[in-house]
Length: 560
Image (cartoon, rainbow, N blue to C red; front, side, top):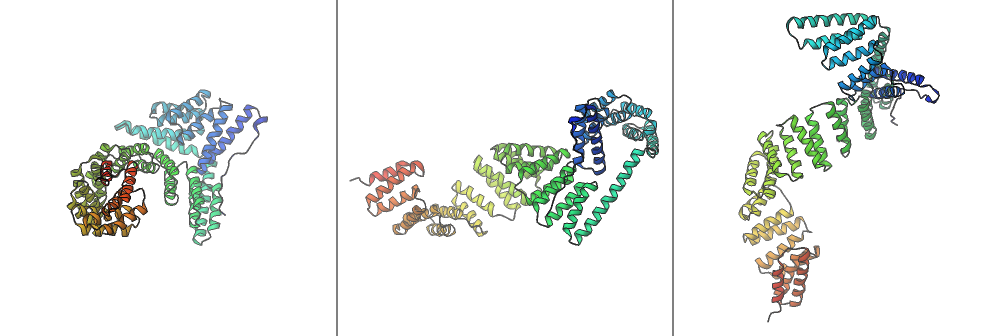
């Protein structure tokens, strides 16, 4: 049975009986412990825990300087505040305790990050004066500030900045050796690294010897005893996948993402797993792509994938917005242009779609792909704009680009059918069918084209083939009856066709009209009148023919 660990780093304490001073002191102690755990294990849960504890401590006692600069560091690292917010927190800490070397050091660090090097140096110098023997961090931070400024200068000023940076690096490194707290933390890191290597090596051996349960339990134990818990969660996920436990694997991947502070590579692993195993979890995919975009500014592919996910949810406006953002990053990407064009089509913004499809065609990353885009553009010209020449031109170009011509033949045949060029329609429908396309409606359209050109036998052949493919296709039955009735003057062969159409759909207006014509031919005026009247009534609900035509034939039945 696979289980998940969710370690907690704080001890539950009843604060009701404590004074505010003691309560804030305990909270600071817990926050510091969580902070150290985060440094050791790089665990996002420890990070969140430390932030929450520092915030609680400040609410109880807003005059604790250490809480402000440590909170600024953690919140900035987690992306919850920017540089201005971090500077504000650190300045507050300096106001509360101007003699705090750590507050000065943190303020100097964020000032240097903000490009305010001169003020940053003053803060570092003050920190060094306040605690000369414990100033290794301030000295190293000062060195970084000089190196950053060096990039902005030239000549002797550049050499001076470099020399000062080297001085502070060496002096800071030397003083580090006399800082017991940092040596202790360093030793903890060494032990942590050794534990990490041990768990990883043993787990690998267990997996290779197919002791998956033991390996899973080992990795679970490693979550509490090493850093890089996200890595061990991913290894647990791999074992769960092997054991066909996708739900457990999903939870492991989600834990890895959370504990890694949404590390981009870990988020990508989660996304790929969901896409492969839970593609229906569209909302989860949207959430994770959104996280990825925040972590990697300018990640155009992320916006592109978001757009496709929004299309799956039929959130068309969101899809358009996402594809636009993708194109801002890569304006000439034909795949992004094509997808935005498709989204515009869904919103019926056809002019915008046409322009983007044209740009995608110009970029032409691949002939086969470009042929598909050309078909999409041709469909707009044909169905929406009524520009048949442009549609035909697009499709003719597509034929040159692709080996898969059947769909293009069908599109060309439909256009020629609509403009009543039946010879060309017959040509392209035939090419499509010769290419292996079998569809009752296409066979029926080809039969109609033959009928329009008075090729009676061909029309009979393809209506019959349409019925063979789709035996419940009432339109083919009715039309085949019309060919027998009007083309061959064979009312008896027509009758069972009309009857079959009505059996499949008794609300078929034209089939009732044609059955009435059959009865009229046979001199059965009563049955003919009933069928004409039935057709007339149906035509008001399912209009297929002018009422005047039905009424004229109905009235003529009883003329003397």
